[in-house]
Length: 157
Image (cartoon, rainbow, N blue to C red; front, side):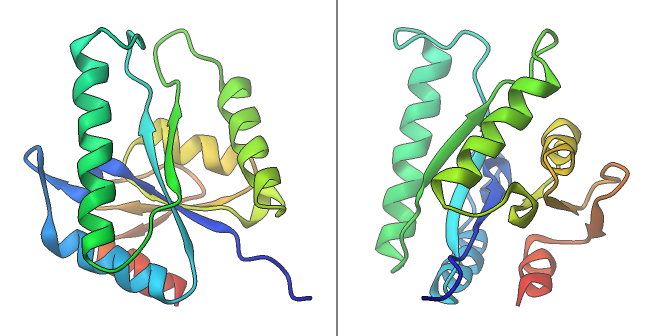
């Protein structure tokens, strides 16, 4: 049996344009998923993570809408992973969460690839041993800078 394909983590904000879902970004990730990749969106955990808070309600509604749009476009999203990135969150907690994610896919954390802009998320993946591709941002040391989501996806193929 062949080696299992690791998931590609994509920062959820890359699929949005001014708080609306970006149709061209959806097309890019649908093409990536059809290429055999597992797709997971990565997002910052809301600061007050409680089911009755508006930020969570908005967050979960956005998650549901993204999953529906991706499904209607002919692809499947494995899910959304929320990482703590607040002022008092610890790097160790984030890297442990990424290690657990990799183990669920039965791949080493070094095989994880993250496409995003947020420096904390980029750094977290690098610290766990994975690769980070920084889209239209300076990124962090160890990340690969690209100009667009499409360019980042092209690097994977």
